Amino acid sequence: MSNKIHVSTKVNGDAVEFLCDPRETLLDVLRDRLNLTGAKEGCGTGDCGACSVTVDGRLICSCLMLGAEAEGKEIGTIEGVAEGGELHPLQRKFIEHAALQCGVCTPGILVAAKNLLEKNPDPTEEQVRYWLAGNLCRCTGYDKIIRAVLDAAEEMRGAA
View 1 (cartoon, rainbow, N blue to C red):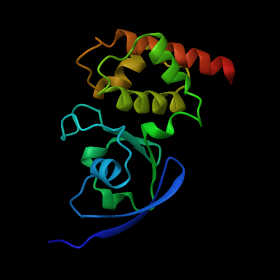
View 2 (cartoon, helix red, strand yellow; view 1 turned 90 degrees about the vertical axis):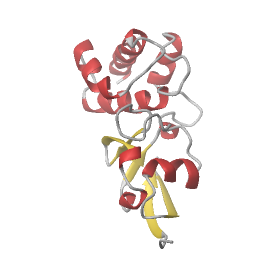
View 3 (cartoon, rainbow, N blue to C red; view 1 turned 180 degrees about the horizontal axis):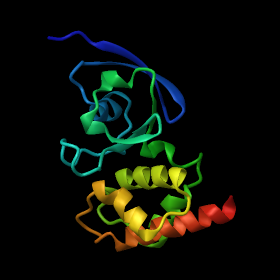
View 4 (cartoon, helix red, strand yellow; view 1 turned 135 degrees about the vertical axis):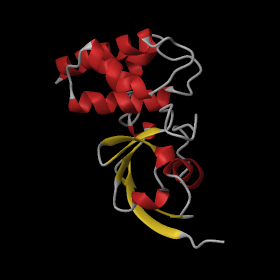
C-alpha cells in the first residue's frame, strides 16, 4: 500500500487539489478524482490520442503522465474548451461538418485542434493532418474532421 500524494494544480483555469496514488495516471485522476470524464482511455499507451489534454500549453496523452506530475501545472481538458454556455468554434464546426460519430476520439481531437490553432491560426491542410496524426478515429475517415478544423480556423481568423 503506497502513500497518497497531495497535488495542487490548475485545471481549465480553476485551482484544484487532489490526493492520488503515485502510480496513478493523469487520465485516471481527471476521470476518477476530478470527475472530468471527457478524456477517454482508448489504448493506455499514448498511441490513440483519445486522452489528449494540454499541460502548460503542450499537447500530451494524459495516459502517459502521472497525476503527481501535475503539481503546479496548468491542465487544459475538453471540459474547458467551451466558454460558459457557448461552444468553441471548433465544437460548432465539428457539428456542422458531421465530424464526429461514436465520439470516443472527439474530445482528444478537439483539444489537439484547439492547441494547433492557438499556435498556428492559419494552418494548411497538411499541417492540420500532421498535427492530428496522433489522434486516431475509427469512424469518420478524417476528411470531415480536417474540413471542420480548417473552417473553424477561417472563422476564428475572421473574428479576431
